[in-house]
Image 1 (cartoon, rainbow, N blue to C red):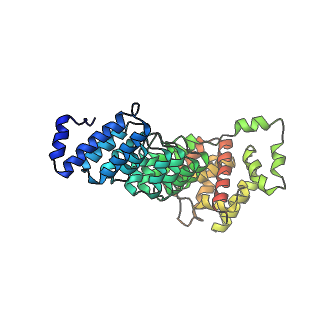
Image 2 (tube, helix red, strand yellow; image 1 turned 30 degrees about the horizontal axis):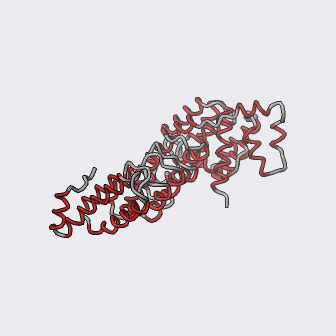
Image 3 (cartoon, rainbow, N blue to C red; image 1 turned 90 degrees about the horizontal axis):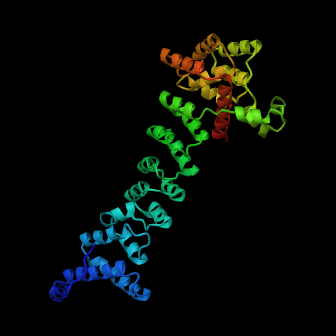
Length: 364
């Protein structure tokens, strides 16, 4: 605590240089303002606050830092003094910005909107950030701020912030695993990131967000024939019902049509064949074929109920249709491992969840 002035201090002040007198006066005013809240009339406190704020431009940075530090533990601080100290450079206000309990959401949003990068970094690292503050911090899309925010486990990320980080992760891959550690991440954005994630990250996404629909199907089983609902004329609902319908194994005739389609050595033919076999959009089929890893194809193959041998055959034939070239041995083995590990029904639900995502992302 800054000590109050003694009688000798007052005598020294009368004989001191102006700068020293300013500091002695500021010390007394700050003690009066910050420790006399319960015994001094509000209008007198307001007078002391006005005088102290007027003195700030004449004080040393050291004393202003000490004043700012005194405000940090206060849940309610004198408004004018707080505003004046927050307007100081971060060399003075930094600790107050980072830790001050008296800062409101309005204060923090203000820093996010008009402060500099260093202000936003300090705010992003504060404990207990609200969603509205997180939203304000993500608007500029500054990668340093996004990293600090996602790494702040006490911050409450909104859907908007999660979306911003998920989309940015396509260019900043280190954000993927950081976001996978957040409880706010939704299946939609997790599976959107799947398309640019690496093998380890894809495994983590499939493990945490398996898109299991068993409980939903069981709840609807005695009320609706999901197969008949898929044939609805309401185009907008077709994808919804298709997502809920249990998987069906591809019949032999359809399997041969698929093999024939991907054997034409034409990317467009392969896309059409996959889309027809799996009842997915050509856009999704194109994403599956053009994917650099084999995981999406493994999910599609299992969703169709292919045998291990048929899946290897289809995957090998598709290699000729890939612009990026044939699957490497490592890519093929990784795809087969995933094919073996996932159930047919779960693969089907994942595939059609992807279909919804791809169609939404590529809608024009």
